[in-house]
Image (cartoon, rainbow, N blue to C red; front, top):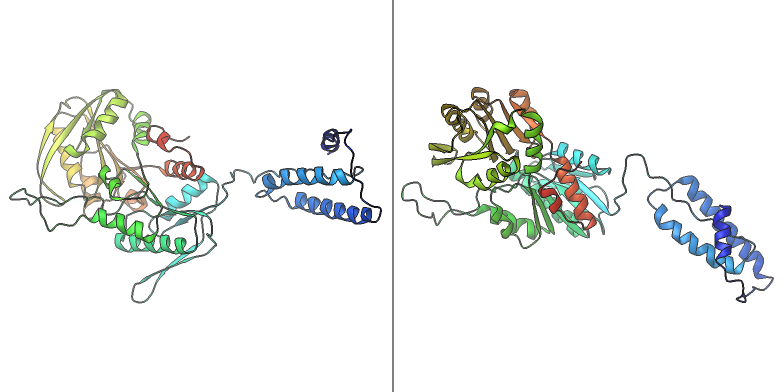
Length: 415
């Protein structure tokens, strides 16, 4: 404190004349200085970490101003209190969780070192959804974490209500963090199974969901591995489509000892770009399986394109629902001479007979991310393993909040 006072005294130009207050003003000035010193002392004892950085320069200016009036007294600078252990300060940010995946939201805020926002969701007797935000969001940067899983329609409506509630409560920006985007498979008019022509009466529900999110008041969307990248074009607001690929590459290198003798396989032609990217990063070959469907969730035939004999086949896809496709693909790969078969999926929906099919299939492991809750599925099958992507989502939120580039996450996993 003496050094600071000496430094402040040294900064006064000695040659300039100083206006001296009249004698009656000196007792008042002394009282003011005493009150400020007492307030500063109370601030130091209280140790308010959220305001330390802002108060320090203010007290410095105040000391310089009062020093010119009372050269014999000098105010101390308010020291910067240490931040609480393991917590980084992120002012003006609030993260709320919907009811679809609270565990993922908790992992995200733990990674960021902040607390989860208070929100109460309930249903009336007629099953209407009611949401109450339990804290002020005025002027805040709000993030709402809600995945498209479980009771999808109820969870989607809950997210829309939460977005609107924050928006009309004067939030500065509302970002919807949707790890698994709902209705992503309904991104175009499908074809009739007989004539193979566009079915004009089919909906494009992914576009409808995009419109609903925008009208509700969302300013930004963060999602992961969209079923079709062109869904980003359905929005008139910014969309960050993150990729699980860096986490998948890390898992392969750490958990498959013979990954150098592997081949990356896409279970359909639509995923060819995804598997070629992973194969290039691992410097291995790739193959794909052409499939034709009788109807939704039912595969008619499969044709393997590529040589998998005496290799470890790694099936990679963005999602698996009833798992009919990947289980048929695994059988096809074993018939073609593959030594082992792994499946790596971003979104493990696992509805209907999916878990039973996985248990009966020839997989060494079925690896999924936690964009969808997997605790129950992992209890029912010891083949299902988990990749945690909460660190990727948390880093995307941190970078978005601070105005930094998110493209780093397209090729790297945060430490």
